[in-house]
Amino acid sequence: MMKKYPLEIQNVGSDTYAVMSKGHHDFDKFMREVRDHWDWPLGKPQHVWVKTVPCNTDQYKCYYNIVKAGTRGAWPATYSWEAYGDEQYQAA
Image (cartoon, rainbow, N blue to C red; front, side, top):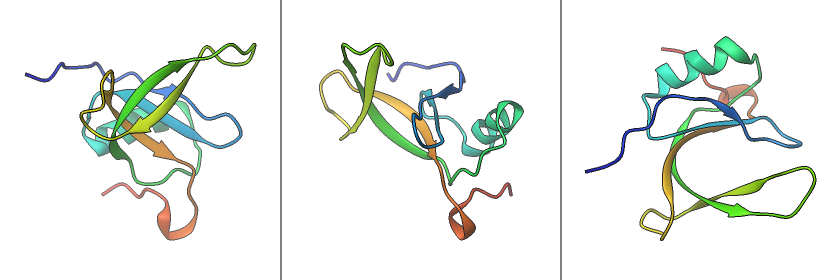
């Protein structure tokens, strides 16, 4: 059985707009929550698998790497990246 994660949006972009939440969430619900916090030009959300990798920088605690499903230590996430024009998310 897959673990359930609460919808908790995080800003994970550094020099680009990117947001994510652990877990595979409904795209429209995810984007409504995003829009409550940011008005950024974002693309259509995707369900991905992410692996957290620690780092030793002053700027970041860790890196989030998108990996293949089934990768050891990976967890599900709903992700949206910066996009423009026809690539931008439009609510149904």
